[in-house]
Image (tube, rainbow, N blue to C red; front, top):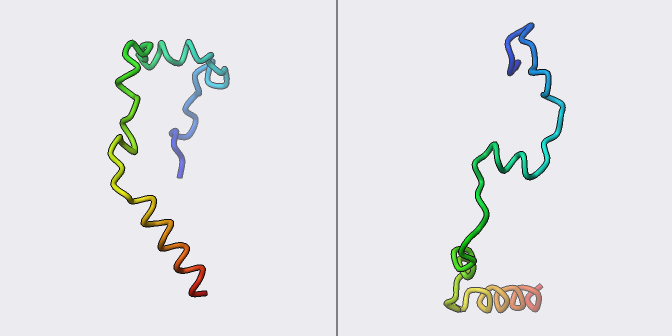
Length: 65
């Protein structure tokens, strides 16, 4: 499957790597201004016991094997 039509020229800068700053500018990425926006979003602050349940199930499977 061809992505470009046959004979379609590539832009002259196709193989030139951008710096992270250039890439961020092209993509419109802005610096983070509020760290709270990403802190504690996953797995979350609430301990629902999921990890402990998985650990117990794995230990039970190891003993049963």
